[in-house]
Length: 442
Image (tube, rainbow, N blue to C red):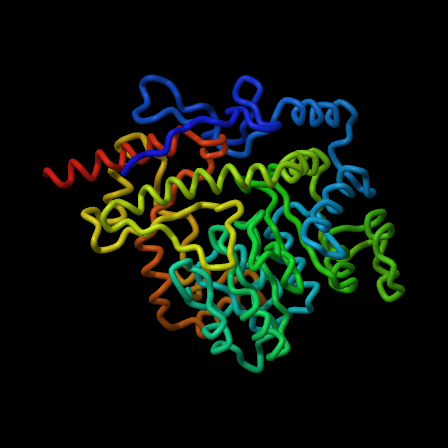
C-alpha cells in the first residue's frame, strides 16, 4: 500500500487558515502536535473558521446583535443561500437539525398514533422528536452496505397508520431517492430527508435536500457547514413553511414571512416554540456555505484516498459509493472490518489508537439498541410514554443488517481531514500498515 504524497495545493486553502489565524470549536479542537502524544500531529478539529469570520462575530457582539427577533440580513442571507443552492422555494434557519425535524413533523400534521417509517441506522434525533407529538417511529433495517434504507424494505412496513417516510443519507451517501419517491407517491405519504450528514452530496446530479417534501440539515456541531449550533429546514410548500415557522418563531419573523390569511391569528404569538438560530451562528454557517464546494472537494479527495488505501489491507472494505451518487461532507466516514481481517473491529480500533490515530466505533448506532426505543417510557409524560410503548411493540423484531454493519464499522478521522491533500492520509496508512505487519509476524 503506497500512501499518497501530500502537497500541491496551498495548505491554507481558500479562506481557511492554519494557526494562529485559525479558530477551532469545542473540546478536542486544539492542535494535537505536542511531542508527548503518540502518532502523527493532528490539526484543529473541524469546525474551523478564519480570522475574518471571527472578527465579524466579535463585531456583532460589540454591537449587541447576538439575536434576531426580526429578519435581519444575516438570517435572510443564510436562508436565501440554502434555498438557492438546493432549488427550494422556502428555507427556515433554526437552532438545530433536531428542531428542524420536530418542525417538519409538526408541519406535516403528524400526531398521536400516526406511524412514521425511519431508518434503524441513524442518529436518534431523526426519530425521537416524533415521540413529542405522540407519533410512533417504525424502524427500517439497513438495506445495503451503505447503511441506508431500501425502498422495498420501507414499503413492506407501510400500514394504514403510516403518514410519512423519513430517510437519512447516512455518512453523506444519498439514498435511492427515485425509488423512495415512487413509494411515497404510490402510497400517498410525505417524504422527509434528514440531510445532516450530507452537505454537498448529490443523487443523479440533484443535490441532496432537493428531493423530499421537506429536507432538514444540521448546521451545527462538527458538520461541514456549522454555525456552532444550528439547523435548516427546506421545502417548496408554502403551508409547510408557514406551520414550521409558527412552531419555531413568533412576532416580527412570522409577520414578515407568512402571508396566508388562515395563519394571521397566530402571527404574534406563534405556536409555542422558540427555535431561532443566533445571528453569530448564521454568520459562522454562512462562511462555510460560501466555501462548500471547495470544502467538499478537500474532504472527498482525502477520504477517497484514505478509504482506498485501507481497502488494500486484508479484510478492510471501504463503504461503497453507488453509481449516480457523489459524496459531499462524507460525515463520519467508515470502513467495514470483515471476518477476513486479522483484527476484530474493536481490535483494529485499539491498534490504531495505540499508534495515536483518532479512530473508533461510530457514535451513530442502531436505534433499536437504545432503551427509548425498547419501551422504557417516561412516566411523567403520558403522551410520550404511550408512543414509546407503541413503538416498542411495533419494532419488536430483529434488525440483522444494521446490527451487523454497526458491529463491523470503524470510524475514520473525517473532522481532521479539512486541509487540501492532508498529510494525515499517508500517516494513517503507514500506521495501519505497521499494525498489519506486526499481526502477520506475531
